[in-house]
Length: 378
Image (cartoon, rainbow, N blue to C red; front, side, top):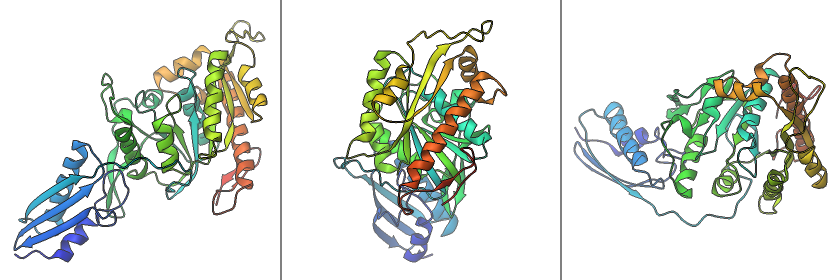
């Protein structure tokens, strides 16, 4: 049988280039094709440097051509990895993800302040308020969202969307989640340079079937570095939430985190600061507050930097226990923690309403709310 070029191109249009969200043909990855009867030689150029990505692409090409064109075709695939160019200046424009209305970055200048705990509880609170919510765990080197949602042993499934294979986010408590933790063992350290980590993130962003979401929360790693720039280059971030504890050592880093988003080259609106572990109230003394790490440090920082203060989350044992067992504390009905997370999340939504009201319709998604939460619409 003589293979036809048109049939092979049509088959390749159903396959995505790893990390780019475009088909092999759209991305221009196919550089040359030679056909000799039932033999075909394909020359491809891709930007993903990982051996796993190249092998996966080769397997998908073989399978697709055999299934869609000719099952006995003899196929030779030559894959070349294109050298990475120097990173461009960061931009918040990014590529929008169809169906996702608002993308919120949750950041902290310092590790250990409970950023992932805040992300998880904002997510379930938004879901309880009636919104469709997803989490992208962008903490490549220390992913903890799978633990907090009791999803440690889960793996995303592959689904076909408009003829292309996509990752289906894992879901629990009504929240859709993707994390590098789904692809590594619990005792496996992720030792990647910046470009490889950025490629992995791009795959979770653009090769995923997120579906319709009102909010995608991006749980960023601590600090200000490659991952933060990669995210802000890739996605149009609607706004950022910065998490800190009250003590000076955490506040100094939180100030840098706010400053990163406010740089002219980035210009991501900071929706506000959250003070985690703000005070301790013993169960037997419910009216007492003990400011173990200092009093109102993050609240004062928000005032100094003229950005909103979203709320104070108490230091409660049940919050830690809830995270450890994989059931976020905001799911505990009528508890002090639930009320604190609910108030904080409503404040965040209200600040997002103000932020989006000031932007042109083509740049932002307008939210209309009643009491801070009603509906998200274009």
